[in-house]
Image (tube, helix red, strand yellow):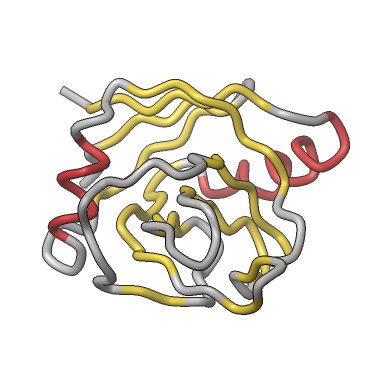
Length: 138
C-alpha cells in the first residue's frame, strides 16, 4: 500500500509511511504535505540524495533510526550534530557528515518505481539540483 506520491524530476515514485516504527517522524512529515523542494547529491554518505533543511526543528527525536538505509528508504535526520535533512538512499549508503557518522529515522519506503532510483541518483549527481514534490495519495 502506498501513502505518498513522489515526483522527482521526470520520475514518479510511490511510497509507504512507516507509521508504526516512526510515528512522530511521519506526523511531522505529513504536516509538510504537499511539499516541494530540491534534491541534491550527498557529499559524504555514498549513493544518496538529500533535502537540506538547515536549522529547522520538527520536535521529534530518534525513532527507527539507522545509519545504513537500504535503496528506496528515506530517512529524516532531526538535526543536532549536523543540519536537519531528509535523505533518500539509491544505492550503498553510510549516513555521515563532516562531523562523522549520523543516524536518521527511517520513515518512508518506496513501494513503486524503485527501478527509477538507478537513474535518479546519477542524474542529481551529474545534472545538479532536481525538483521533488511529495503529496498524499487519495
